Length: 217
Image (tube, rainbow, N blue to C red; front, side, top):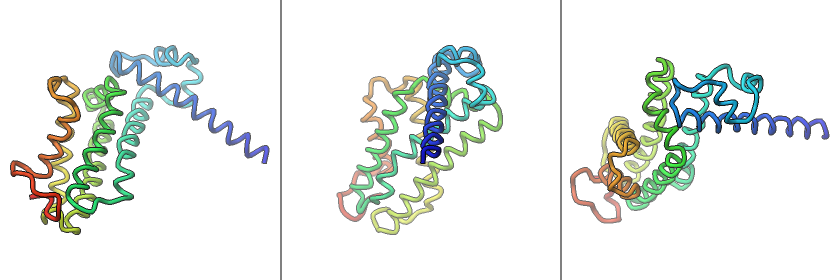
């Protein structure tokens, strides 16, 4: 029992050290960009030594990978409640979508500088990282398709090619995020921007329908 407790405490200690390094990398990379960041600057921000860094990461590239993974898990986690309690009508679908995206936006705002580096500098790091970013979009499109398939089966979204529509919606969301990161919508509250995008995904250019069975048009 004591041995197992020590092992668990050691795992937790290692995980905390790794998180401290990731937090430091997020600060430094967010401030000055991936290419201009040195490992020595990350460990200085973390208050640790380079030996500690290399026990957890091979190089700066692996840290950038881990930062993307951590943010993606945060994003996907915002949909967990919606996945467990699937919406029963168009109004619930719309409101749950807005709430989840607002939580994602809040997380992105907390790490805005880093997220901007991931999105804008990531494709230029190397081909593997560019593919990884594309894979993130694929995962989100798959999640969107899961919800849309449910809505179509339940009768509150029109029959459609859910794979195509889901990819289009996620593509719009990615473009909106990039423009927001660039400060293109500073005159528009973020909550309103999210509602605009979600309502466009639900209604297109048509007028909204009622709260009942016919959600999307």
